[in-house]
Image (cartoon, rainbow, N blue to C red; front, side):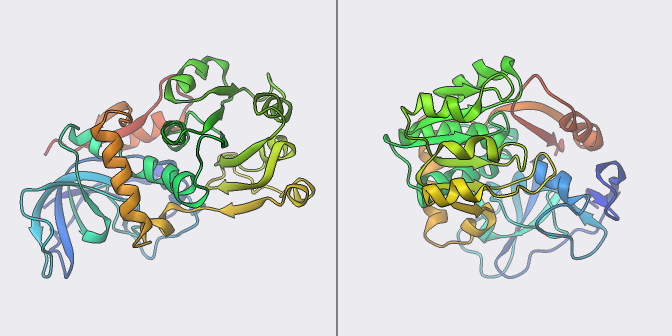
Length: 332
């Protein structure tokens, strides 16, 4: 029987247990993967404490949004995928059927063929970060050479992906980080300007580097701790994409600044756009193209074996000096 990491209540990652589970057969429109690798994401950490925008339907539950593996069973009605084909998963909310397992059954709507030039570990780290950044920048706001984009917490994988994608779209990219030693990394990832709150006055710096225009887009997972610092430097018709609460506090919206600039505050979840039948194929095509050209590539920080999943969460939860995805390799 395949092994899987299960959580039995909202106790945090410390309560994860490695257990065997029955081999599941795929249903209509589903495939089963022999999982080679799966990635850790911050949203999973919040979910394990019931602090996420979705909740489990039942326990025990598996964790994990991203996996890569080889198809070893195909359900009825599936024609576009074949046995032996290597695929990875798109961002989807998995309820209790997460990716922290050696065997994963998943609807083909949330499956993508992997690029041939990437390892299984890299393939498990593509879609969450790049699609999360792609939809607001390329599809909704349609940023380009005249756009100024602020990515807060830019050393996160989604923040760094926003820098990469924004650079490919021609926008001027501004990244924030708590630590000055991250500046070189952010510039490598695509930041034209780096702001260190506490060292730099955020709004004044934005006004200076945008020649007084302000930012057209804020891509922000921080929460209350930063929004009022950059909101005085919003451009006319700016849009704030709010996709997380890293500081654990919901923001009080800066209504005066938003009224003055006709700004929009948008709670943003990538899951909604993966479900869009027009946007999702365009996002996949864009990312495939950028990967094939070598303009983007998943950056891997550390790889842990299946048995050390809890240790991997320990590592992810501490301040890090290196950057990129933390990934589990099953050994299969």
